[in-house]
Amino acid sequence: MDYSENTNVVHPMDITLLAGRLLLAWIFLHEGTSLALNFNAAVIAMAKLGVFEPLVVAVIVLQLAAGLSITLGLLTRLGALSLGLFCLSTALMFHADFANHNEMLHFEKDLAIAGGMFVLVTTGAGALSIDRFLERRIMARNDKLRQPLRRVIGMGIL
Image (cartoon, rainbow, N blue to C red; front, side):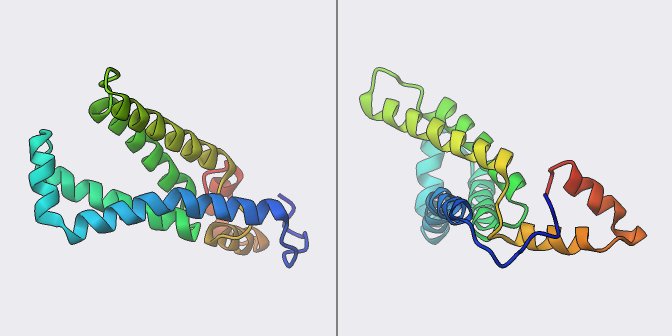
């Protein structure tokens, strides 16, 4: 990335990446909010599937936190990786009854969302994100305190 580039230019790819992030995050923000607002019913439904209350709480927190991470473009790669792995585990644990056509569709949907998340892990959030704003600020200054952050950015973690 050339940090001297014109940061006022928004490319179509940046808009497309933002739209993709928002679409991917929507399902998790919606589901996490629904589970939180209907917590008792969610706990009862999940208990029937062998999922206990602390794990329901963890799922709600994951969906909301990682969903917001992707929406805002803040620690996007971490949020996307978390949700990609979550989708893979959900597909394998809850939708592996391939004799049931509906379960097969849910399995494939979870795989597709996981694929989108892994692409986001690779590409990062793009120019229209908090990640990129922080990256530009950190890389523009060359003081000793920012050296560890500059290494993290150089490795593509942020």
